[in-house]
Image (cartoon, rainbow over all chains, first blue to last red):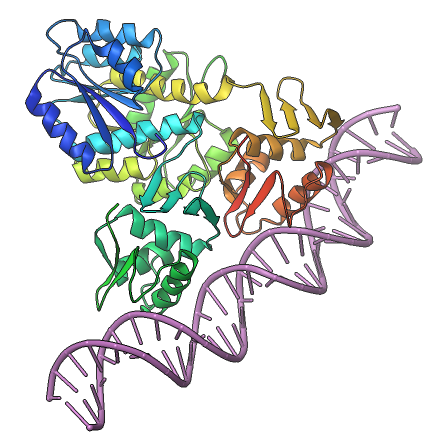
Length: 229
Length: 229
DNA sequence: TGTAATTCTTACCGGATATAAAAGGCGTAT
DNA sequence: ATACGCCTTTTATATCCGGTAAGAATTACA
């Protein structure tokens, strides 16, 4: 999962599968799909997902039973997505080894946030962290390691915050005031000249030419943005 | 926490506190209570809970802000309990480092199940690995024996805690405040001079040159990390 | 009780980093 | 064509931070 986490979607309704796939992709996650219970073990073994989204209401097997079977040999985080809303179903699933339980219809943003929580957990015990990648430039948020073409580069705290703030919103324009707030906090009386200096330092270290940038683009009068992916 | 986990309840309404206390006790869990935001850090430091149940709607400070402050130095699992039900509040809390989010009124059984899930998570990281190994440096957690190139070296309690805290998260950056909390249990973020001294002693004993370290790396302005494996 | 080990305190140095101000370059508008 | 605004670069200064050392206070232990 060094690059982008891989999510296995187990869900029989193709509409929801498609919807989830799009939502995951737009958040830099890969997805693998499975529409029945029978193939789930093979899919897990074959694709080795970082997380599993499991619908309890599959036609060919009871979801709770499937959950128990998976947990006998597999520790991958599992988020339950189900139309069943009773307390009993939730408690049962959580005690059967599920890591989270969302009732349909669910909020996409909340699901994504809970996926991130689950991935965060597995990183604690694991080794690789959440990664921002922009071309040859990689930022590992858990180890604070920044590499450019496999070479590690050392950033000061301000430069690191700048880069991660831009990288987290890759492709989107971040205004001067947003950046100032993200890096320096509430001291909003600063003007954007601070930004220019540190953006310059950052560009030097990652080898970016302001006249012809590859990573950090200046949006005159507004702010900066990075190229998407 | 081997036998009965300790839960810190942060909630201003005494009715709910009392209710939670009973529910936890009848499930073989201890509880510590706190009815305001101001005392939370002291309570965490004093009681070292295994999990925190946090109400977002405290009168004396915004819950999200408090959450962020806690997460700067403390990694204890946090379950949010709140009357705020909007998607935005949930996502914000989860991204601020909360591990779960329940909307009031909540189901007691579900809360207990989710508490168990959170405790399960923190156990996974805890009991694994009796041996920390970083290159030629080995730490046996069961016998407290530290060897460097097969030669035993004697560490003081503080040095040992420092080394194990760094070693358990090999490759990841540990901030000053996280280390201070882990080793001294206090939040002396005013001055990290303690750290400097003991890191120095530790480095001397394991033969690590600060200018060109093999094991303990300084992350300026942030903290320290060990090299991964 | 005396000694050693450990921890805490204080102070200092050097280098890295942040801030500040001024100068230079480019495009645009009047 | 000139002046202006915006961004970049340069230079200079001050502050912060981490490493080091030495001694005091505390604790452990014999």
